[in-house]
Length: 309
Length: 226
Image (tube, rainbow over all chains, first blue to last red; front, side, top):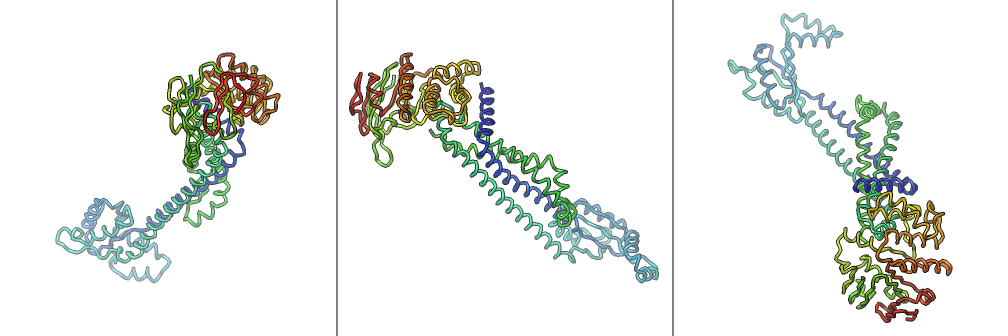
């Protein structure tokens, strides 16, 4: 019996959608617009996320050791740092590697190369390049290095020359603030846009259901249960949602294709068109589920008022 | 059996729609309720369908207090009553066939029953050629015959007709009344509200007259007098 009811409600919903085509089309178009806004939020979120991750990746701290610092002491410190929970990875650059890198960087500067050759010994100390999991954790790591733990294990001698965190502190702090406020702002904008989209859809569906209020009353007077009277409208709403999801997705193809090169420049390396193609399945699902819930849910709530007969 | 026991309906703005109305309707009876506009005829029928609740008094349908029914029982209760309205109240986006099938679907009838009964009832009201027409493609008389077909498809105990001839010409009026009489002859209780003096006078059945919410006359074989 339940299956028969579901079959009849589905059929009635589909037929009603088709026969009431003008109203169905209007609500589908408005819903497509709402889903389009949600889609834009998904794209913007992804772009912003990639940009912020790239920005964060550029932040690290370098620990410069004294030329006299023994390698085993440095390696011992490296493993100590690696054990800190906030540290993502630590890269050791030996004195020789540092020299080679320096030479490579200045291979076109004869004056520096010449000056280096004048020296008997390698003037560069070894370095540890530290990457934290979060940018806000660098201060803690710097403090750890400043503390007693970072001193030479044997004779309490200083082995660290300098830590560049303090030179870059203001830049890192500023970046942290930018990242935090961008995230808060984008969340607030997304929230407002989602609320607007829901309100827009709800009002359109409510108007569509309003035109059928007498029909709902008749259904009730003929003896239909609330479920039976409401069902076809939920199916119609969900169907509008599915169609509008397809519509919005189709609209995104030329739009992202057109915007692709500009976003690649603006957001640093990621093209919105590539993102659309690579995450098509995920975007499709988000749109489809949002559409079904927006349409079906709005219908459910809109019909409720007219069932009180 | 239907009993209105001391029923009053007073709306929030203190307007009185019904005042201490008491009468009963026996099974298989044909009762006409007459009265001027605003006399309370439609309110009376709405109370039987539990569309409105009495401010005072009780409406019984087969010994059950109608206003005490829960959601599910209410749907079941309404399926026992066939309704015909002046403005037809057909489902606009359903064909003649589907309008009747809908009433059968909500009553839980299976597809085989629907396929065999709907054409039969449409033939009974002479709409066999309009099976796939939508309500807007039917004339007033045809719409009302369709509404009657829908009202009787589930073989209800009672058919209530709220001014069913109000929008019809004399020829169609006569046709509708004949169908209602036939339904009554076959054993269904019919409650008819009407303004039409000619209809009431030719019926020669029981007449209850309402005036400003009160029962002023209840004649076994009455005529239209207020």
